[in-house]
Length: 288
Image (cartoon, rainbow, N blue to C red; front, top):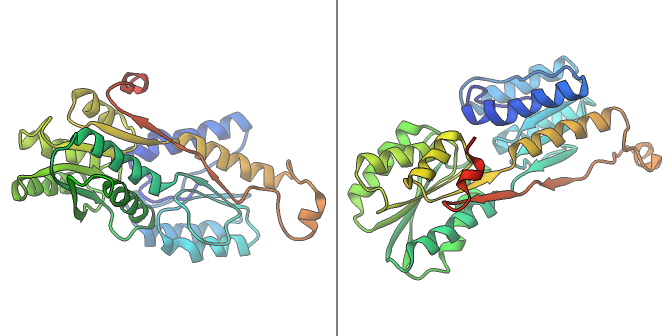
């Protein structure tokens, strides 16, 4: 597994845990490689270093379009390569992950319903310029078009930092008295939105939504600080991504043989592993 931000709690508790469990279940030696902080250049460097070791397969976190050339190098080196989380147009053998446009769309629809006709502005926070985030922003804006009472304020950079998100959230609430909602698009924006709302004493007055369902996000939803989460099936796309690599290496699903003879493979081109909508009515199902 080659990713960035290997110390990110979301990756540790979901992706890495699932990957290690898969390796144990299949008796396969697995390793997790990449920088501890969020650095796409460092992830690219890690991918290229792993290619040189000629692993049996590579499961690469699709963090940014910039890693496409490194993915292509892996495939060209004859290494079975699967991308997960966010699609990266490349020569990868298969992609498994979420539809980020839908993740934004669902947040927008939830905000529209929760606003219940209240007029005002909606902002979104995340990592600007990153392909999956931008798709999410686009989905949010599309959903908001259905609600004449809501106006899209803009998208704001958080550098995947809880502290920066909290600062931006507080600034937005101070600058726009008619701010109705803030939608977050990384695992760290949700806690930041919650912190900002608490600090400004706006719990229940400003709607907070976010992607993913870490323990802290679920707690904030349970407390009523956030009102909606859209969860990716991270364990699902990591587990099956690893299994697809195993199947490809061992020709488990090599049918018909002319696929192989023609230089192709039997893996699906892409798999949408789906999303789960979480609100006050079903949040208890996700709290351990």
